[in-house]
Amino acid sequence: MAATRGTGRSVRKGVPSSDGPGAAAAGASGLQSMKGRARVVVEDIRPRVDAGAFPAKREVGDVVEVSADVFADGHDEVAAELRWRAGDGSWSSTPMSPLGNDRFRAVFEVPAQGRYRFCIRAFVDPYATWVRDTMVKLAAGRDVTVELLVGAELLRAAASRAKGKDRTALERAAEDLRAAADSGDLSDALAAAGTLDRQVMLRRFPDPDTVVTSEPLEVMVERRRARFSSWYELFPRSASDDPERHGTLADVERRLEYV
Image 1 (spheres, helix red, strand yellow):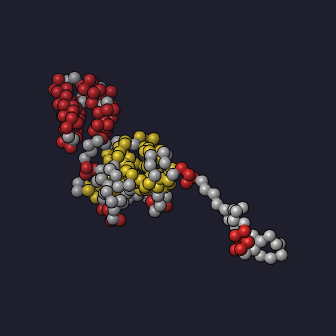
Image 2: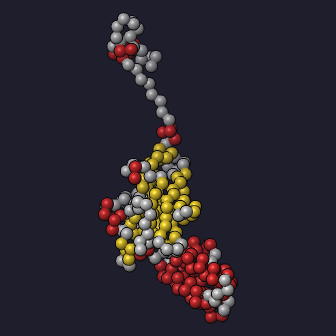
Image 3: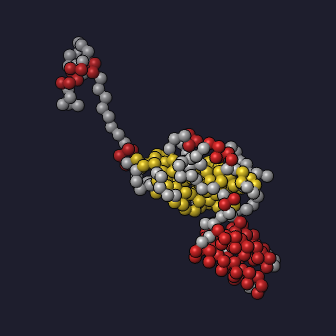
């Protein structure tokens, strides 16, 4: 069954468009992928002002902290990354760190004045799930030969979506797991396959049919002086130097040097 919790936020499949949040229908239709309903839910994104109707405010040089609830049905691991850009520039991204209780967090800097957009891309992480479950079986003394072959297939699938050196590295890692399954050298193979660097690499090449991306939110970055202001109010009727009559604009004119 589809994952639900509270009042869900609209999410859509794929990479955010270059021209802003996009059509309103994109969020609704994005839940349905060609291979079934997307399993990951992204909600309660912060900072968010009036459900995204207005941009959050920051100052030049600030670090914007973004957090969200990211979860799915079942017990699979999920992964999320923060994507942002300044104006109509290219998108940058950074992995989000889990804080516990389905909450994820990441930050980005805003070095210049202007409008920034950010969104969250999330997906079920089959490789991290495989590492977790296989390590548990190995610790329990179970034969994990078949699991090594499953891991090799996950690496091969990721390699098909990668290019250059990353593709070569993933293909070599898949071959190493197959060779370990044949030779019975299970512990060392799993230790290499389960490193954090390997898992981070896999997250860069998720299955696009499983990825959901939140609608972009905005941050308006102002100069530092925008944090304060000063003004002077003067009522012409109070500008008279004669307590028996109301002041006029002529009285105000005589006080301009003081103002």
